[in-house]
Length: 155
Figure 1: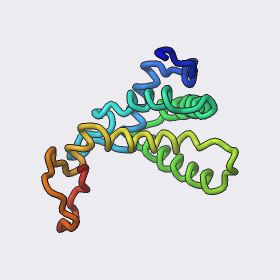
Figure 2: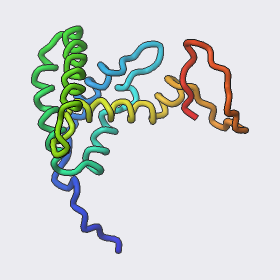
Figure 3: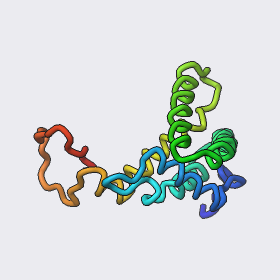
Figure 4: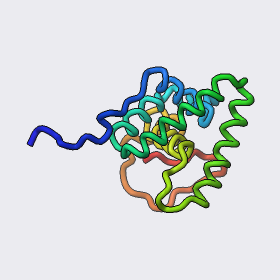
């Protein structure tokens, strides 16, 4: 009962260099502004855990192969070119997702972007600094006034 026979992710792992690179890509997606960015939330580490523990082997391969292809181009580019590269890759992934067949894998950048958003907004930094957060919200209020420019609620 204490030993798992599930080997999902057993042969998959990311290096520290790949995790640091994921932090850089995530920071390009959610940069530091008046709140800390994705790198401060250690989103790369989060992605490594989720891909290793939760993704099937075929999706892990797509993720890792896509990461390697992105790294080759991204690292050689200037910061403004990196931003454009991410925008172009996002458009490419969206087009791919709209036309892909059911048996085709998810685009690697779609995985990276989804994990970036999930990792950031579920982190302490994302929930407490990028979103409005009340540790003990008290009673339920179904209708709370919203002013244009207010942060979304984390709780």
